[in-house]
Length: 361
Image 1 (cartoon, one colour):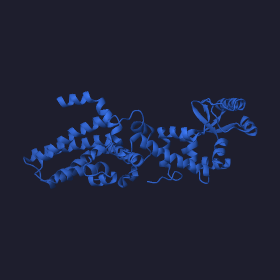
Image 2: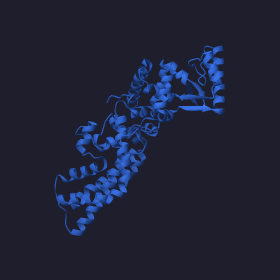
Image 3: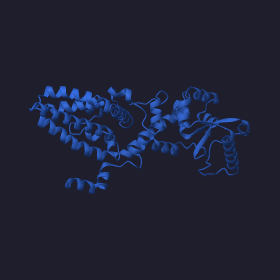
Image 4: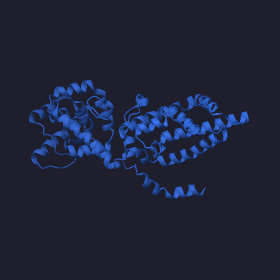
């Protein structure tokens, strides 16, 4: 799915929250700033120089996208903080001019300021500064700059490359890389057994009951039946739908299955007979209405996570969940791509003793 960074704030946020990709961009692009308060900083003049635009163009972007750029790290310095920053700049320029080969990563080789710019900097009562994220944010907003266009192309290529390197192209099962996937899939398996047993015990024999009632649960949670979900994620008939679901979705499915199984049991026992499939459908509507107030916050969260993550990680759009799409958080990028993430095979091996104990129960 093509991304237009100048128009889509969602795509911009997803890139700026992807710290793994941003580190690679930082390493490859090679535009460095002065280290100040733990982050590399750039002046407005430096940003304008890099993109080869008039400084007034940067001012217009700031005016029109103030909240977004502040969120990504733009900050207006004044008072003591500005004084300290000016001292850092002056020290950097002095060192850089004395030693052209300076490579200290705390004061690395940035675009040198002219004497006139230094003089202006020393006199200004306030100064706008950009973090590296804010600098990239400008590049993703700026039209009419060849340098910005090239930067956007590089960023998108790196994001795809990082994802492929990390996952080996297996985005379909990115959900399995988080720590909570295994506990959730085990819980869901157990509750699924209870659910199918309840369908056997309390509903008349009917080969359609398993698929139809499972689809009712899916549609309650994420508005799609199993067939629709398969098509969106391009799953073949042999691939398990639930093996691609995020832990939050699996947990909610478990809740539905367990709750509906209890409803079936109570109604069948009160009637003293098994239910017809048509009666089971009516009972599900009653169950869903009863559950509404309890599951609504969890369902909203599950829909948002599923829609947002699938668009960002799998390039898959759930049309029926478009209103729930939001930016993927930095924590989620770390969870699925960072050091906390892990291939399922490795996680299974690390938890081998746990599975042995479960098997012996």
